[in-house]
Length: 276
Image (cartoon, rainbow, N blue to C red; front, side):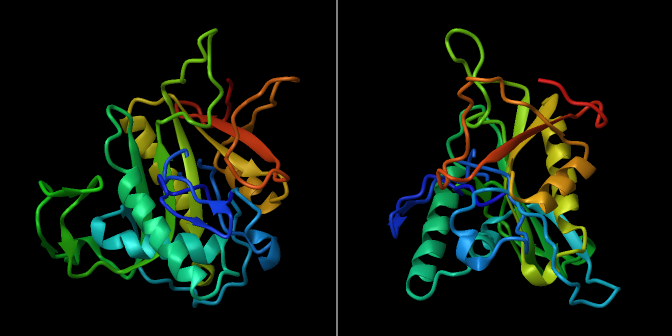
């Protein structure tokens, strides 16, 4: 789906209020994968995942790809990936302002969750786990990220946010309580030159592993109805479309009002079925 805010964003650019990196991203947050199916002029209106449909530009043998949690050192490249995939039409100085906005939102959005889980995953190209050398300490926390820095950090090619905040999940009961036990995917984006290499799929698989480790039984996302590539990607990963009951007012990612979403879920203990 498309960009869903990366955090509690302090800036408003061109009358666009960029939200937090949480549900989000993740992050308002809707699951997005950058797709070639949308024209650049329409990208700023979309708020959903767009699966990549770009001609392969790289040789058959791709560089090593490592999917891991984002570290402090990755923050600028995460913001750059987010903006270049979902707001490519922005030019100087708005592009710089947007990237700084995303960076600050990300640092603010990953701290102080009080029992709720949220993390940003990155797909890094050209970084070997076995050869990575770190400086700093995990005991130092800045915006929810540890203070370790790698001397062989590689290049961020894709991002994804997963959380348990439940901001964009239907509430339950007469008191409209937040749902628990459900993880939410948002802000899925892959840089254009690294698409069609299975990066989005690996990010989703890693997100599911995190959700299981958090004790979640289900994982969910919103996908743009006008993005068949993203829909195909998620269905291939075992997600099922959930029909919104007639007259129900389920929360949706905060994007352009004309964007329509498909709510999708997957049971983590049975990838072939899903219920809600």
